Image (cartoon, rainbow over all chains, first blue to last red; front, side):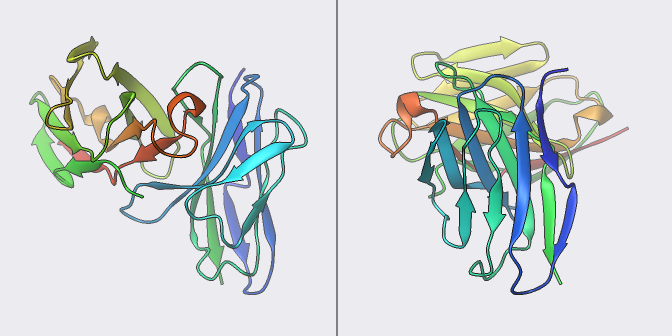
Length: 112
Length: 117
């Protein structure tokens, strides 16, 4: 059953804590993306990775960090430096040569 | 950097009616895609139209692209209650870092469609 998974589905964080969101894909896609979605808004790009061991900042990278040690995994860490982290986070992947992105089910992060 | 802007922001119709959503963008593009998002879920790709195409069909979906007006429309014919979702356009812009062949997309804010049974 190929696809892209995100965990957890819901995450609660206390102020000042770092949290890591998981994103795994078994589609053998080269590129992976992290987006943030706020209520009633579109998606904003946080980080992207075109290949293993390489990643680039998107439009709103401040307060976030990523790693791409394996092709199938692209975890996102929301650090305490992110002042307004409450949002819906979406991970996506894309096969090289194609423009279509495949999305995971999302993680809803709430800061208490 | 918001590229696409959908119009209307919200649309409410009866089952069986057609739904039309519009998307306007600002710069040149390689292609334009439409995605659907059910509430609280991930996005699902619906259709892609390339910059040299004017119209494309997929089942009950019809997409048009007018590059001279920098606009696209998505038509859903004979709508069903199950079509209730938010619809987003996304553009692949060769001029942005990561755009073009690198595949980065810029998403609009979406149209929230409600189809009443």
